[in-house]
Image 1 (tube, rainbow, N blue to C red):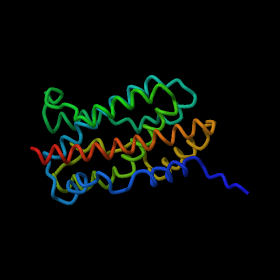
Image 2: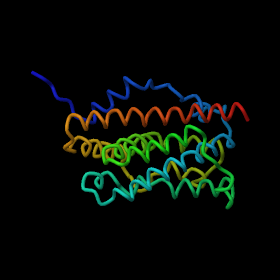
Image 3: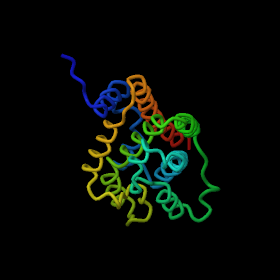
Image 4: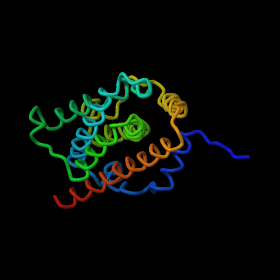
Length: 214
C-alpha cells in the first residue's frame, strides 16, 4: 500500500535533501556567538528589507486570492519593522545608505518571477516567513543582550501579534496540506521552496563575503 505523506512533510523532506542545514550559516553564527558586530547586523537588515519588499508587494497583489489569502496573517508582515530598525540604526537617511548585494538582487527577481503563480508565491512566503518566525525569539534575545537593544533595532524578530508560534506554524502547515494542487503543481512548489532556501542561504554567504572584504 502506498503511504501518502502530508504535503508539508514532503516540503520539509525535500529541503533537507537538497539544502544542507549548515550551508551559508557562518555569518549568522558569528553574529550570535560574538564574532560579529553591530555593524555586521545592519547589512543583514538592509538586505532583508529588499527581500521583504518584494515578498510583501506580491502579497498585496495576491491578497484577494482564495488559495493565498489564508496564508497572509498580518502578524507575519515584516517590512515596517525592518524599516523602523534601519531608521533606528542608521538614521532617517537609511534608504540612501543601503543597496542590494548581487544575491539579493537575484533573490528579489526570483520572488517576482515565481509570484506570477500562487504556488510560487506561497513557496517563498512559507520559506521566508516561517523560517524567520522559527528563529525570531532566540535571535532577538541574543541581539538584545549583545548590543544593548530594547525593542528598537530588533523589531524584525519581534512577532508580537503571534502569541503561539508553534501553534501558528502547525496551522500554516495544515493550510499548506489543504491546498488542492495537482501532483505536477506540488512538484513545482517543492522545487520553488528549494530555490527559496538556496537564495536564503546564499544571501548569508554573500553577507559573509562582503564583511570579509570590508
